[in-house]
Image (tube, rainbow, N blue to C red; front, side, top):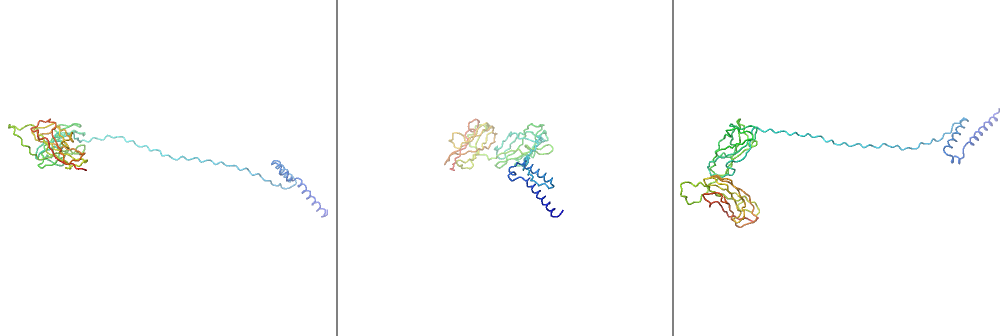
Length: 345
């Protein structure tokens, strides 16, 4: 075959293939109106035709998968830790052991605090004590002078000749002498067991005697009683009467100090002592009930009073045995009057 003839055949074959391919392609309008399934079918047919003619298939667009929203897991809140209360230990009460030696002061049997005595006067002081320890008191126990004013006291006095069990009481006495000089005196005492162990009130506390020594005042001259026997009756007098400050101030408390003394030869009592801030006051400004006052013994009495008015001059009075309950050898010396002034504030 000649070259010209071969060339013509090849050219016709190519034109035929192009013509066939153009017949199978859809128009633009068809492509626009086809639904997705028809378009996929057309593509598949074209691929098949190309494959049968030895041509590679025309690639098609693979539809992208629709985006899906991934739901993230929500955070579970972490619970905050709580404080677990720590259990507390309940204290078990324990019994405090009672010491072997311990005492309690009960009362002054004689010579209460503030008793007035004359210089050099001998007196007997008696205390009532209670055994509050766990050991009994025996004849080997003493009371001993501890501190203060001895007033001619011995260094030790036997507490008892009996057995004083726990809870029991005992009266113990000591003979003393009032000092020669006037003033207030106080002597402190403690206890000592048979083993020389010193103890006191509650634990180491002291009990004491306290007196006031005053000079005797001159007794008014009385008509002598025609008898050789001294009058046995008591005789009460106010022998000291003081205000502090000596000139009170209206509205400011003033301290009143009174001493009542029994100059007679027998005990006096009971009786009442009163003080009037003014002799014309309708009621007493201070009062004291005295159960008993020994012969040649006295008491110091104190109170506080406030004047509600000022006075250029006013008489104030202290009176012993205001109700005349005591049969005295002299009933005319029971009061004491003092003239004072009360300043304005």
